[in-house]
Image (tube, rainbow, N blue to C red; front, side, top):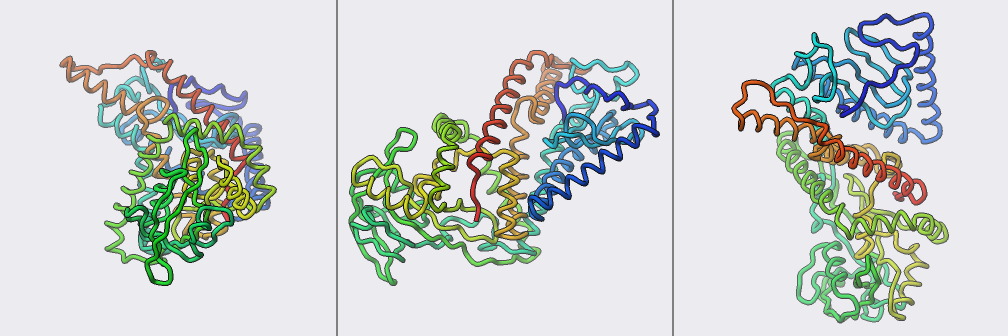
Amino acid sequence: MTDLEEPTPRDPGDSGPGTERSDDRVGTQGWVRLGLLLLALVVLTEVAGPWGLVMVLGLVVMIFLHELGHFIMAKRAGMKVTEFFLGFGPRLWSVQKGETEYGIKAIPAGAYVRIIGMHNLEEVAPEDEDRTYREKPFWQRFGVAVAGSTMHFLQALILIFIILVFTGTPGGTLMPPTSSVAWSVQKVYDSCPAKAAGIHEGDHVVAIDGQKVTSWDDTATVLQDHPNETIHMTVVRDGKLVHTTVRLGSRTVDGKQVGMLGVQVQQKSPPVERVGVLSAIPQTFHDFATVAGASVEGLMRLFTPSHLRSYGRQVANAQRDAQSQSTTPATTTPATTPGTSTPPSTTPATPDSSSSKACAAALAAGTGGSRGSSDTSSLDQQSRLTSIYGIFQLGKGVGQTGGIAALLGIFALINIFIGIFNLLPTLPFDGGHVVIAVYEKFQEWRLHLRTRYLMDVKRLLPLTYGVIMVLGLIFVSSLYLDIVNPISVK
């Protein structure tokens, strides 16, 4: 849905609702443009490969269904919809059906449905006023506003169900608990604290200072909290418990000292399992709720000062980090998608003490530095924002390595996140229209009005423009980061 927009200037040959179109000239141009678009898809297939094409088509379908939700609800409510377009900018192709123009535009950065009278600033012909969005009852306006996110959630539920029943997923769930992911030490690096403490390859840490740890993430979190400190570790070695003492190294992350052990670990997900149809129904909703909760938590954490500083550092150092990766073998970023195992991860190298420097040199020589997922590098990965280009590259890589099951998982996660993100309570998001509808309904109840109360949207314009500027900055910076220093998936 578009918000606070003036009607897009039309091409000289374009026609709007209620006008005739010159079929001899404009119609031919439209079909030529559509042919060029199809040719571009063929070129994309050759350049990006079949998985790249699948990713593009999947994103297009996802965006189309979002707008289709708005369109269907608006039509059911009797609202007048004048445009339904995929993309923005100049028209490539369009066709007029009744009062609605359907088409494709040149910039594939989204889609929109134009519903007349979205707010009090828009002028509408008097005869159309009763068909405007603003004149419809509360529940109809609310239904149109949330329809886009609802479509994302429905897509996610269907995808999760398909994954659970037909393709299978590790442990029979989209999000297996970290405690179910088996892991062990794959390599111990020379000059590192783990080597000095007698940690062996194949060891599995089960407790630190008497505190039970059930996953590598738990272990890494505890290690981060003890830089340059001596800790007591309990490991399982050849089926026996072994106790050892380790003096950790350290490195600096966001101005804070964090602990460093100096090992590479191998993580292996539970076996892939399929779930029965009846059992998959509650499991689908459970997995959906788990991912949704993690998405909300991630959004709240994303804009904290520490994560913004980390993101700023990633953008500022993108070229240097990319050059560092090109000179040493790079490790991969784990993909939390069904049907794939988490790749090896290492403690990163930017130590502060002289002993830690030697450990860091060994790590860098063996793993390519800090790109791996570990007790400290995970801090940077959590604050990374990904552009649409980055999502495309990530999905293509996941499809190549994990197949259709992994790609379906990626789309399920994307749909849940976008559905929640789109409900942020401010314009230009759909959540802003939800807030306006609720506020207007509250004012009607509070003032005992029998007529519609219309909020003056002009008061929200400064905030809206500020949000648009922030979104623009995020778009440009994340696109730059994904191009210069892309996330690697192998």
